[in-house]
Amino acid sequence: MKKSKELQRRDSSGQVWQSTTKAFLHPSNDLLLGNRMDTHQFSTDSLSLQEDHLLPGSKPVLEMLQETPEKVDLVLCRQKLAGKEIALIQNLCRKHAIRFQRVADELLNTLCRRQGNQGSVAHQGLVARIRNFSFRTLDELFQELDQAPLPLLLALDQVQDPGNIGTLARTLFTLGGAGLIVPMHNSARIGPAARRAAAGCLERLPIARVTNLGHALDRCEEEGLGLYGASGIHPQAHNAFKTPLQLPAVLVLGNEERGLRPEIVKRCSTLLAIPHARKFDSLNVAQAGAILIGLCASRQTA
Image (tube, rainbow, N blue to C red; front, top):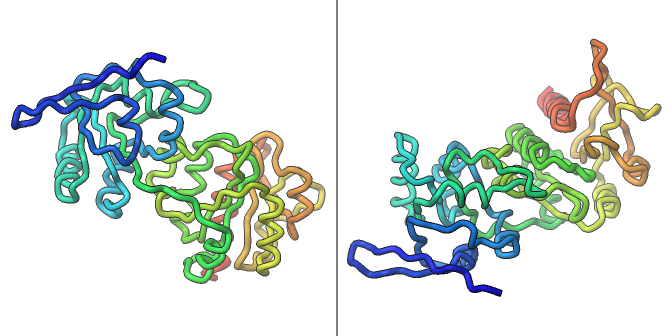
């Protein structure tokens, strides 16, 4: 295997700094990257372990720096990108001793590539690397229920679109939800696309990643939580607008095409359907989830 090409820059004292592209991807590395970068030197293997730590987009990055700067390890900015927002981001990085580096746009595209290498996530020339992002345990999510404005957990059953995960996290966090439960396998990655859609909410919302969603729901039931499943096609589904919703609870949303799996359906104490006032095919999982989370919030404040 060929060695990664070394990158160089001179600081104000004339000292030359060197680093390899692989070294950049390691969160503990403190070397500065050069202004000229050959993105072809980045291998898929070296990138894959760190993609989940990236937050793309100017607004999400700015909000993260303003509210929780301790979670940001590094900010990468497109060369020659300027403006008031960029100046503010630079000042915040300087204030909180966060590394700010100008890089080629091709590098940002590579770092923010979509799952399956189908294009890249819109990053607007800014990407932040998140420090020490970690998943929580189910027990920790149960503790969050006592403190959250809305004692609701959201469980996702094999949701494949990272944008849907990010949008749902954004809705859940905004309305005060306690946390998110996602399966370890057969689910969209919580990477740049999800973080972009979440606008910084994934870093603030407790998330548990479980090996078996069915067993996790069993645990939730043992803790006394109601289990509501979203299923617009199941014959036993109840009108979500007329069904009393008791909290604390877990709301379970299914795959974009197949919905909830049978083994998940049988664990739900109540199935909910959103009635359509007009003839229409269906709502996507993020839209349906937003309506149901909103219903739970309205019952909480009623």
